[in-house]
Length: 83
Length: 467
Image 1 (cartoon, rainbow over the protein chains, first blue to last red):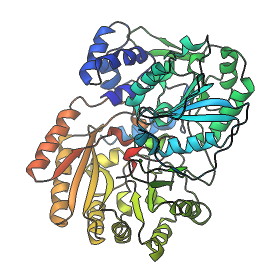
Image 2: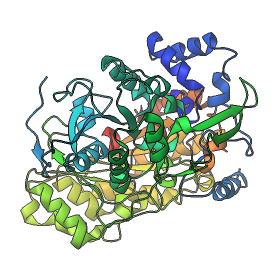
Image 3: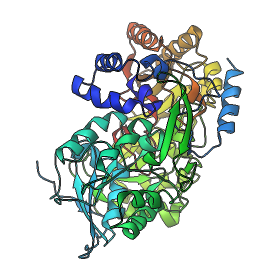
Image 4: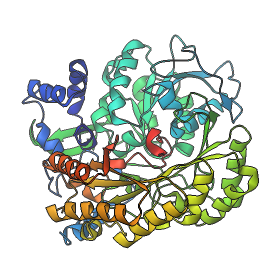
């Protein structure tokens, strides 16, 4: 879960990361930090469990990987078509 | 702890009197850091420059540190190691946030590696500069530019560095949100002087990475690591190792790989072949012939996980003869349907064949990597995995079977980046574990979920690469 939090996180998490480290490295520590910062950033579910709409601006949208986003979307649609 | 006796495979340059001092840190222990091929290679690149005076820093040990370093670099292979980055900054009395380092004589703090290349954003405020992608050429352009702007004020330095392709200066980009608790509305450069998009750099040379140092304190004692391939051509829809590092690159066997291996064999008899899909190197069979020669008799050979349909009796035999006891294959699921969804071009028949080849070749065990909570997964898919494990056990008696299972984690720059973690995944994993135990099968949780940092990465090979 922490991996998902960090892999889809945005800059607002930096405050949370600074805070949690003084609480310990358990999931509970992260939940506690989210509670403490409530109102300043989205909740844990948003980062970890929510499916994001395809037109949402991704935290890394200004960083260009090897493939254009259009190709990733196409591959996503191919996968969904087999559900 | 003191530094163990290391064998260097390159000649460090003697720093000139003008050399900039650079601390090169790995945010974990020496043993973990020195087993990262990425850390080794970048260290070698930096040490080979006479315009730098480099000191290594780990959480448990460091070389003599300069009082006021000009540069501080971090190689980040595991996201949770960020905790150690913050602690190291504090212990060096350097403010953790980039914005608090603009005045006073603080080093330029930069970072690279797979975690920061995929999605640096949670950590962006801690770094002045983030290097995106393969380091081979990028590091030199970065250091060259640092040399040019040395002595200028921090703002000028950062603006100039941001012009270098692959050099990302987070503070020069502003993120705005629909609301404080909402999604991002835009990410824009704060000045027209910096590019709106930063491109991850791709190295296209013939020579991939090889160990620059062999250490008795590496996680695998005295291992010499050779990157056999970079990226993976398969493009499983969740896989960062494939998608982030494309295109698939394979160095030439005779002119590149074998000379690299010979260099290692001169100092150690333990060789690790790394890569997301090493057996897909077009000359892999000849590489096996190379290791079969009697002169390699006392060699210990380790190999990263391999593609299931490339497991042959020949491969298993050589691994057995060269000290390996098991082989690891990633099957993801026992369900053909689910594997089609994720673009894993693999059928159960091929899994049976791989297990049988491993057994015939003399290996004691086979480890299968699976994943639960994949998008599109149904309870039937789980049943299919259990069925497969049971059948495998019956078909290859005597072969130790291990299913290493993790939950699906979305990764940036992959087609599955939009999917969240399945909230039921944890329970599903537990259920799978219980049912496996009932059948007498062993199932372990993968230490590292997502399996994304397994493969070869310029800056990020780490411990779990070799199984």
